[in-house]
Image (cartoon, rainbow over all chains, first blue to last red; front, top):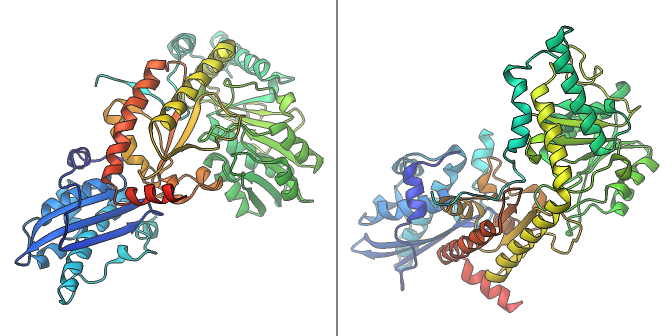
Length: 148
Length: 397
């Protein structure tokens, strides 16, 4: 299993690490049993992601996908941000090993959860659709196992 | 890269130069087929049988024919499990293996479980040991084979093989042990251990990869796993790997000669790693720490609040090679079955780190590792959304 140079760069030098104080939206997904937990905080201005930060407990791919998704989402409108797909995240990183594709789900789900959290807090309808990995029983490995 | 600190000797070892020197003539000069009758073949045959005698003498075998050369630990384990279980045309029966065996034992055991046999995977206790009384409880009338590894490759605990073998034999079963991690590292004598079969691997003791052996006590019936030309007294067909045999025998002799000074040297280095990691990082522990009977070269840590692969990659960037039982480092996506078997919670098994030392490890290497590990762990913990919570929970305990 090999990581691309870009994955290694985002792993070694992750962008936007931390927590936004008094964030407008918070998304926390994954669970420690599976080994990956991600927390994304956003500040929103005029329905655009003005600032975004992450904290991740996880492997190299989990950290790299978190980092890149924060770069991708910064400046996006909320509908744009929730439409980022796991494939886009992986492509942006120059690809991920097959066993690590679930990490990109965690990254997009963390972002979706943060956006919906913002919307719901403001009495608006969530727009992200189902977020599988915010379920405490979610097993990100299930998807891969089916193909095994 | 400034540093090249290899701390994964339980995974594999470099070929010792003395071993390489012994092997070299057999590649292109003394290349004969050991089955050929002419001089070149006889020369290869003699070298091969000489290697067998040296291995047999080293492990206390009664006769060289009790040593069957194979392609490595995995083949030896597969041959032992399947060959002993099905010996004499047997098609059913009960087999006991420990739950923290290497996959080279678990794989064939589970295969047998689908082909007529019943398998019990016996759990070790949290101390990392298979307790004789637990084996006693698991024994049945129809138990035909017990296989428990001698030294665990991940946590380094040494199993009470003699006591386990006695129980197996009292119940009419054969006893096999996977000794890939113990041969050349601690005392190994087939009679003292009371075993019927044992698996060995060359590349764990500074010999070449792709070579190993199976000890099989005289009179023990075995269905061959590799069939063909009838080599190894019809128990393992295939043209004799003379280069491998010479390398393995030489490697074993060197390990045995140097063991009296090497084992305590490694144990002291291991203790230095343990002291360094536990002393300088909070919320860390040594797996199976309460057990004294352990290999001198393996230490396995739980480092709470980090994930193993992330640690491994950062250490790699510093020129340090170690391994982890985290799911994320394997294709199976499940954390180490060894750590789960000794009761380690999954969330912490992801943060395991195995350090294994060897012939070329120095005190400087060990200190460099600890010095580099500390800031890596602190950085990863600072990035974790859970670490503050883990720490708070710990302080509350």
